Length: 282
Image 1: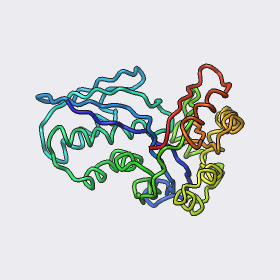
Image 2: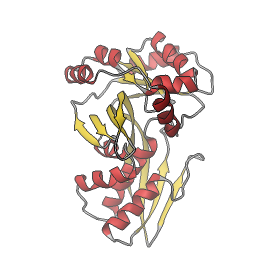
Image 3: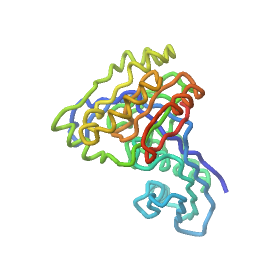
Image 4: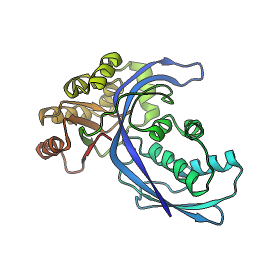
């Protein structure tokens, strides 16, 4: 048996530059890996893929990105191997934290090792792009500027060790609906990527906090005003900045370290059905 960790991500910035000729939106976003992770374990099997998950809301069928990753590897290499995969789910589901994409990326890595396929990192990234826009970043990790659909990556200096408070309310935001609403109403706030990249290079945490921005924020808040309330609560509790991750609904607050993040989380007064997690950038 072997294991792979599937790390969550947040978007320090997220902008939409327009529509592409293939119908997708052209993105520009700075993504950051978190220490918060799911755990996948892999065991060889004579044939077929069996997925077992400890979370009732995670489908274990062919639509799961883990199963899709296994099917993609099988088709790409022509192998006929099998595996039993167990998923310990710690990343909130449908939260804007790339939990599913992280699991798909971990499945590509883990099955490549389990089956002795010998695929290069570049081959895995190319396959990951077929699974989803966030999968290439989840394979690479760290801090990166992403363009295209999210699959064109430019590594940035790492930002490990910053404290992060995650708040996920008890509702979801459909990514497809968020894009449709953005096309109708526009979005905001627009990020300043050059300023953010300069702040990341200097590891200027206060500037990074000030520059957090996501164009989906107004769209998500128009559907769920609670999102603005969460952001306000995080700022009032002492974060250096707060923003939506992905298309939501999770809002995160940035702190100088984990201890400060724990203090901020302790000051929050939110409904009990909200999930509050403290983690760090990785």
